[in-house]
Image (cartoon, rainbow, N blue to C red; front, top):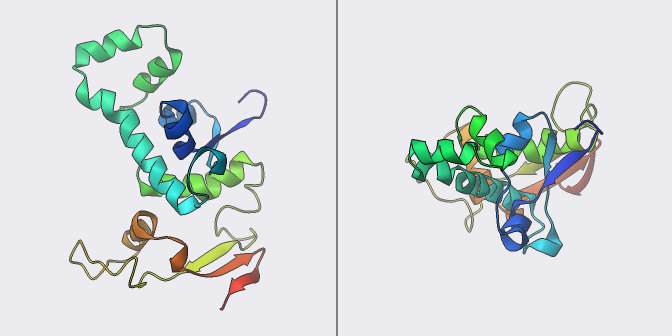
Amino acid sequence: RERGSSVAHCPLSNFFFGGAVLGLRSVVGTGNKVGLGTDVAGGYSPSMISAMRNCVIASQVAAWPAKTQPQQEQQQDVQGSDPVAAATAAMAGRTPLDFTHAFWLATQGGADALGIGKTVGSFAVGKDFDAIRVTLDHPDVLDVDLMGDGHGGGLRLLERFVNLGDDRCVRSVWVRGRLVSGAE
């Protein structure tokens, strides 16, 4: 952080080669810039959609000690020599990340980590229009109404895409306002 560096969080690579998961709340909570990444040398998928799902799963795994250890054992862990565990435990709980956090890491968090967050990463006025248009009615992917709400709207649609979507849902891609794939 002091040197202006950032973290590229590749949760699938951590599962395969790290033998552990990143305490992401701790890293972000101490002011580090973090973006979500894919490490195809360390996993089986270059998909950012898959990376978002794996980010949520990794966060759930990182929260397990807080869910399974008695309070006294947690306090003993904090007093140990592991500064990362101490920082993680010191944060306001060990609440796992959800799909909204993973989506932010894949978009604005990634842009900030790369130092281009003022021009890309969100749909804010004045930023470049980098976007994908997706369909959520692909019969092989998302034609499931598990909640019984007609698939919902807003955040529920984003949640469905992050949890169930893949490249078959992407209909169009824009980079810097120019359509580079698909149709308008």
